[in-house]
Every structure is written in structure tokens, then in C-alpha cells.
Length: 211
Ligand SMILES: C[S@@+](CC[C@H](N)C(=O)[O-])C[C@H]1O[C@@H](n2cnc3c(N)ncnc32)[C@H](O)[C@@H]1O
Image (cartoon, rainbow, N blue to C red; front, side, top):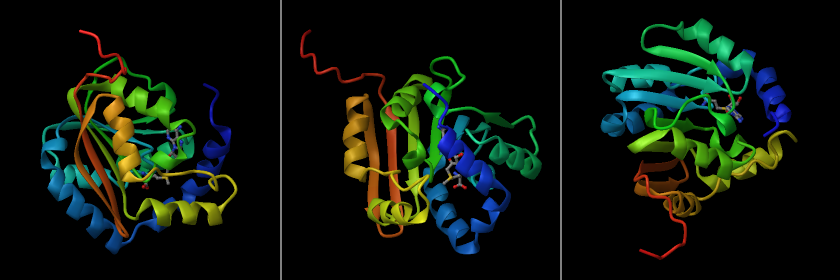
């Protein structure tokens, strides 16, 4: 798949001021969600579309015994992430595309995807990649701090680069994940929260009903 230059350039441009989007209210809302994740925050964790690393302190606060891989298409975001958090024994930053993840099969215990899914140019391909790199029984957490309706309207009005980026409703995403062999454990959508937590069962639904 060709590199998605439009999103890459858009997010490269916004990287230097990206951290200005962080505020106490946003962090408190994320803390509430992360506190409830517990089980999903250990082992190998991959943060897809990580930006400058807003989730790093949350995984450190609520996770245990983890290695966190921060991954983003935008090199500027990854550079900021490295400057901000420094690579160490438990934290790695990687400049890559979610549509072609540079990992072998079944590497991760948890995939985190915060405020990023709508920006992936081909969400079905990305979700298939997520399935490939997740261990059987691994978790996928898709999170936003607003509903899909509010976010989709916001994107339409923001910039041509993201105007057509669309977050499916949690029910649409859950149906797609079921077809890929995930069991959906949590599914919430309201004005200030969009959360899907799903477990990879390793059994993709092919529609074939044979024995
Ligand atoms: C709205 S930002 C969110 C960043 C971060 N999760 C946060 O909340 O601060 C979306 C991120 O997804 C990244 N992104 C977009 N398309 C991507 C792709 N194909 N592969 C990896 N990252 C991508 C962008 O570069 C950007 O950093």
C-alpha cells in the first residue's frame, strides 16, 4: 500500500504544537479509562498512531511489567515522542504505517488506538494487520473522548486533509471486529467517550459453515 502522504504531511505539520492539545480535563478522562483497563496493560503493548506520546505516562501509571511500543506514520511526531520520553528498556518509538506493521505474527498482548482510527486510510486493512500482530487472547482498545457523531462533524469542518476521515459507530466497529474473530468485551459510546475493548479469539469469521 502506498504511503499516505496527505495524513503524513498533515500530522508532521501539526507535531510541533501537538502537545498544546493536552489539558488536565483530557488527562483526567484518560486516567479514568486507563484505571479500568488494568488487565490490558501488561506484556507487549503497541500504541497505534501514538503522536507525541500522551498515553506513555498512563501506561506507566496503570500498567505493570510491560514493554510499550509507540508507533506513528509521522516522523515529526515520533521525534517529539523520543525527545519527550526518551527510549529506554521498556519504551520504544517506531516510525511506521499501521497498514504494514513491521512485526511478525502474534507479537503483542495489547494494541491501544487512541484518537487515531479515523485517520487510517484503509481501516479494514489496518484492522487485519492488528489481528495479525496480536497474540491469540490479546486485546484491542479503541478509544476517543467523544462520540463518533461529534468527531466526524469536527473532522468535516477542520481541514481538507481530514475532512473525510470517519470513525465508525461502536456498533459498526464491533460488527467488523466480530467478523475478524474478536470477542467484544466492552462497547460504550456517548458524548464524551467512545470505547471498544475486544479480545482476539484467533478465529476469523469466513462465512464458511462447513465442519
Ligand atoms: C489525531 S492524532 C492522535 C495522536 C495521539 N494518539 C494523541 O491522541 O495525541 C492521529 C495520529 O495518527 C497518526 N497516523 C495517521 N495515519 C497513520 C498510519 N497510517 N499509520 C500510523 N500512524 C498514523 C498520525 O500521524 C497522528 O499522529
